[in-house]
Length: 275
Image 1 (spheres, rainbow, N blue to C red):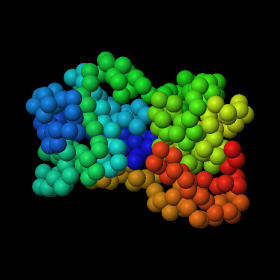
Image 2 (image 1 turned 30 degrees about the vertical axis):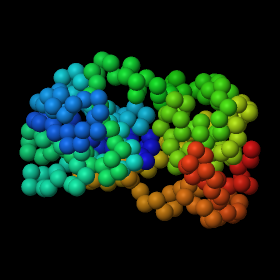
Image 3 (image 1 turned 30 degrees about the horizontal axis):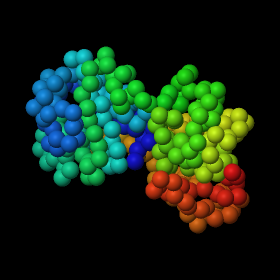
Image 4 (image 1 turned 45 degrees about the vertical axis):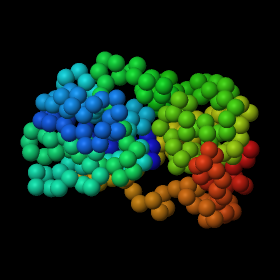
């Protein structure tokens, strides 16, 4: 699933490609993509609207329109956008099609069927349930060591479960949580209420550092209007622990181990990452 850096890349690329362009017609091909909006209402609320801005909040993409509405998008497992020419066929898993006035069209393609869209009044976006529950952005003033440590102490969950909870830390998923815990040298199964202030500070720094590295790398990615999915670099050699079970730790050469938390795999070094 795309995490903060990948979603940020998608939002930046969509902003670059779509700002100022007008949606002539919108077709909701798969009704479950926008459960709260019937297909005819979806089409009517987006028709003849101009895209004024595209930005990110957490793992959500916010496509702001000039009609005081915002299209809220979550890519989930396999969602991606494609900008196609008039002569191009829609992909097999096209769930929404936005016909642009210049003849091209924006298509939301999702092979796994987990993506979602929701139309919200722009003035209400901050209080919408999806956005209101999110923790502060990692690069915002609201995200501080004090706030982070208090949140850790108030929970009794494992660190891994805590880090991927979007109400606790925004933007981390399975991949970057593993990398953050490795960078901070903390075991993924440690209970958060037992994490000391110095260890919380290490985690805080690791979150910022890991996400900054990924965001900087994403800026080097090539823009492919036909495949806007957030992928920006080959996976091989990109991760220090994620998906490297049995491989040597970059720090101590001991094999990377894999355990599960809530049905999700977690990769770590049992030597470098202590409880």
